[in-house]
Length: 106
Ligand code: FAD
Image (tube, rainbow, N blue to C red; front, side):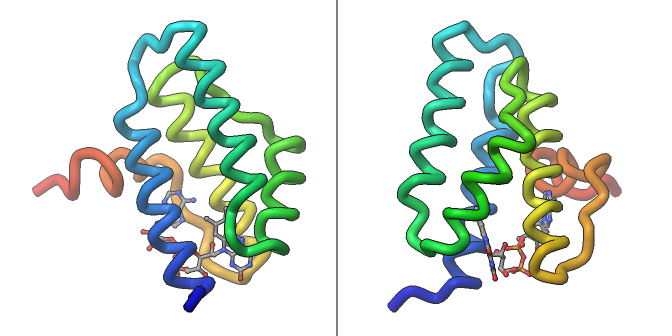
């Protein structure tokens, strides 16, 4: 059965990892594909009220697809909008690569 929190964690895991491995120099096609992916994703996200809000969030803060860093930072901001709404702590976006790409520095 659908567990909203489990679904959310899995989805953020996927989205942040996808952004972490997005190209450094995406083609026009890559950029359009990513924008379309996010739009369609928000249409079919299987928590209807989450999806409704997320579609609105995408309009307020449209995806930035210029390169890996920009997309990762944009996604961090969008996730923080959701964090704020649901009362979760705001994540420090300077830590995104450490969390989703490189792992903690020793
Ligand atoms: P999550 O928010 O799932 O985060 C997982 C991990 O990501 C965290 O442990 C942290 O390490 C890292 N992280 C946290 N913030 C950031 C950030 N800004 N940038 C990078 N990494 C970060 N729940 C609702 O109750 N109502 C909603 O309307 C709702 N809408 C959602 C919309 C979308 C598109 C998604 C994907 C999820 C939504 N959720 C919603 C679920 C919610 O966001 C959480 O996933 C869920 O509450 C579980 O929270 P969590 O504490 O496990 O951490």
